[in-house]
Amino acid sequence: MFFETLKLALHAIRRNPLRSFLTVLGIVIGVAAVIAMVTIGNGTTAQVTERLSALGTNVLFIRPGQFGPGRASNEAKPFTWRDVDALGDQVPSLAAVAPVSQRTATVVYGGESRSTTVIGSVADYLTTQNWELAAGRTFLPSEERGGAAVCILGQTVNTALFGSSEGVGSQIRVGSFSCEVIGLLERKGEGGMGRDQDDTVVIPLRTLQRRITGTSGIETITVSARAGVSTTKVQGDIERLLRERRKILPGREDDFTVNDMAQIIETMAGTTTLLTGLLGAVAAVSLLVGGIGIMNIMLVSVTERTREIGIRLAIGALENQVLTQFLVEAVALSLFGGVVGILLGLLLAWGAVSFLGVPFVASAPIIALAFGFSALVGVIFGYFPARRAARLDPIEALRHE
Image 1 (spheres, one colour):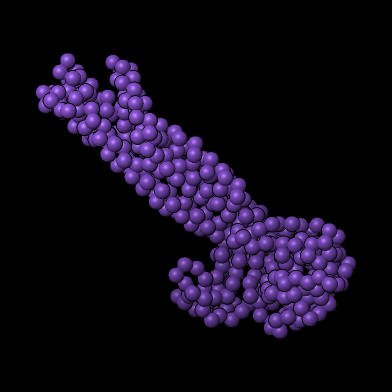
Image 2 (cartoon, rainbow, N blue to C red):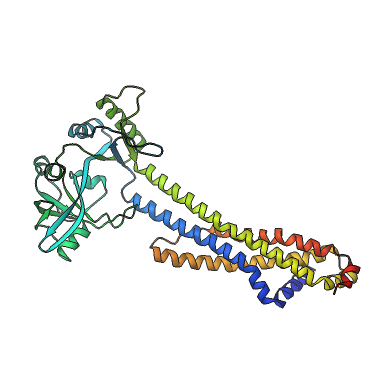
């Protein structure tokens, strides 16, 4: 009996192909929009997480002042070299400590020049940033102490100044002073915020302070925890030490911020996931619009086929049989729209992620949910027209022209 009802429903759908197409169009657009938005959002989240993870999940950043949600930076004294030494000596769970300051400067070699980020730090900076050397060497302790005019180039800067050659051993001008290139960093690509990490020049921090900034303060200290040590424990040890060194009384707020890279990754991933959910929810509204379209068309169909319904009821068809027929028509339209919407959504998502350069991360639960929701829309919005058809008075229906 059900298969006979299904056959009648499909025959009715094929009888008006254009109207059936326009009916399912809303469902197709809704399902496609949800799947495309969620897939693109998942790919963006995966890319942000991957790029931030490349910096290392055992890295912490220490800055003077308060930073974070609902907190603005306040006036706080910068860190000193004594703070850096104290962290290295009194926090045994640290594998590396690197003070960092940076400025923008122009680097010049021959007739080539480039405006880039000049980072002042120490040899341990490469350890804390999980960076390897492609050629040359890092800073010697004597060069760090004496503020020697030596530098390590990122791949983007090396290409801009030297083309396909390695610039190790050459003399370049950084700002207003001449600097010997002693090393070349491995390529890293874009960072979590889309910044080119290879567009950089690293010099000893004391060199930056003496030749560019003219200050002795340290803007940031990056540290990496030893393998197997919880960054939460390391963060607590750092906060206790710095509160003591900066003479912060009990009950008073810190005048510095310690950020755990693992927490930053989690926060960024949570933010992009939330935005993905909001985009998916907005797209899902079009599914409701598609459901209303199905109900509207089914009501028109009931009106057009009133005499047909009357004949079926007069020759013995039961109300629930008529109800089932019209309900099957609505659900069939919705499911067809759901299938086409899934295929279209995946195709649109693939094109978008290829253009944006993010991973293609399809979510099977979201696809199943969108398909199930399309079926539910067919049941809900198809029920009312089907019930109206089933409750028609056979005599009145037969009189209908």
